[in-house]
Image 1 (cartoon, rainbow, N blue to C red):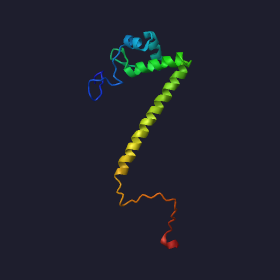
Image 2 (cartoon, rainbow, N blue to C red):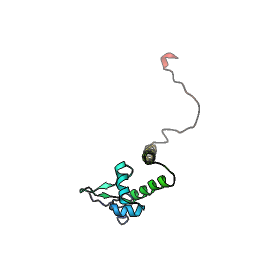
Image 3 (cartoon, rainbow, N blue to C red):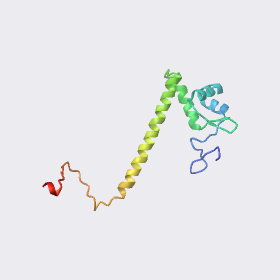
Image 4 (cartoon, one colour):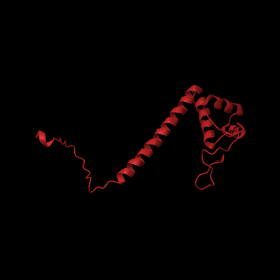
Length: 135
């Protein structure tokens, strides 16, 4: 598999494409390369690794680096707090994706129902069924 991933048009890089070496990513994020190494070591931002061990940062990684910097400098959040924020944000995104998948599956299943066989009513009536031998 290639280290570069593209969108459907095959001309615009995928937001997760691994394009930048550490020096370029550091410059784009407005940080020192050593800061990126520290963030990687702490698990705040985990870039892709080449077979030789070199870090490759995607545009999404660079955006995350900027957010880490903003939370740290502007909001005063410590690195442990930032790591937790990132983890929770990732969980929320994963859950939102799962809800969307389930909604699409429900829609697909629902579209297969024959409405002439299954009438849809919005009644609050309760029907109690009793076997014939108990009547």
